[in-house]
Length: 189
Image 1 (cartoon, rainbow, N blue to C red):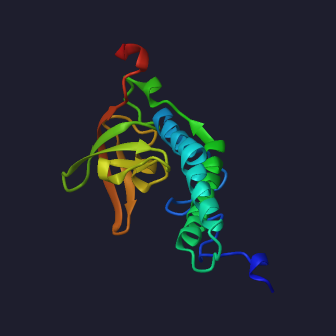
Image 2 (image 1 turned 90 degrees about the horizontal axis):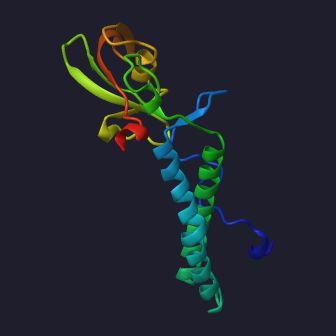
Image 3 (image 1 turned 90 degrees about the vertical axis):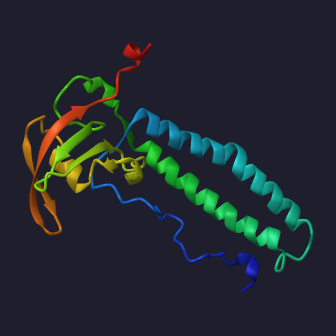
């Protein structure tokens, strides 16, 4: 069979959602307005700038003749596949995104999506986490996804409540010390 009719494959499935955990079946993709804006900006950057730039490189490289040993052509095609895969992934995630503004709960003491919660575990270790969307949580910044075990244990609890957290070493009780939400935009101005 002619190589022109075979599909190049770099070992990864094109529809893989690489790097992020799958959403629980039948649930929404909760995300903050800021997280949604970041994903949308990345998508637009890929579509408007990155992809056309790589297409130009591949077009130029293809016009040079022999493509089998043309590094610009081969790596450009690979990069195009990566960009197209990321565009598909971002498009799917943004289509199912449920934008939820945590500042609407400002002043409340109950834990909902977007809350910054300070809790104390059985060893009297105090920790603070912010409950975020799957596509935006950064554990290095103290953010956890709303589907994580700690977030599931904390959701709907109030300041002063003691909740049970299931860990790999067993069930642990944690006490909710403080619940905070971002200030609404109207109050910031």
